[in-house]
Length: 254
Image 1 (cartoon, rainbow, N blue to C red):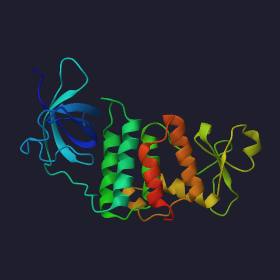
Image 2: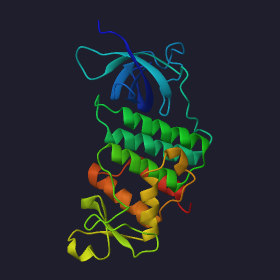
Image 3: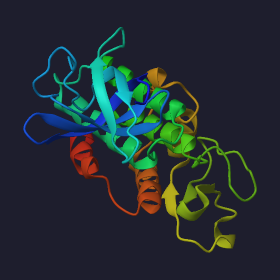
Image 4: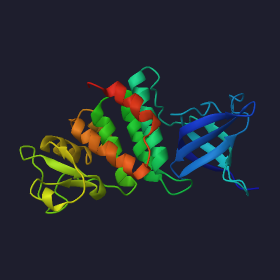
């Protein structure tokens, strides 16, 4: 019988299975992304005190099965882990759901993802104690994309490395290049581009470097910068996240 393992974990998604079981996908600190079955999860308050709902931050105990991808979840408890309480605010639920879905989309089963877990945990922890706003969303997007190998460049031109200053001319975000090109280099770049005000590019460059708990109070980019990130995410996922439209409606006008 495989030995029991344990790791801090955040529930990304869950669904009922049979009469009392749950199938759960979690992002963990020590075991990457895992999907598992929790027998009796809907009935057992002793073994599953957090009930394995999305956003739950638990100490996960599990055993790997000799065959099949699902692990066998034996217990999930709060332990001394910080809990992310978002159920008092519909906007927070919208942004939190987006954080879960984007993290899920960018991670693969059992691949090393400790840094992704830390980014998600930090994002949810910040969201739980701050008001919802576009700056936290953009900072989270940039941070999780960088972890996944897609570091977007807004601070300088991808072609000539000219630094973008807030009082300079607009720049152009090229999805295929994962960054901006300056007005001087635009004609030399054949790909389509999104025009971004220099101040939006500067804001995104700063959001990509500061801690997530600072981002909630930082300046966000305008709609142009938000569109650039959204287009890039769509290009690498080849789909639009289901939670994005709901989140957009909650952030509209903020």
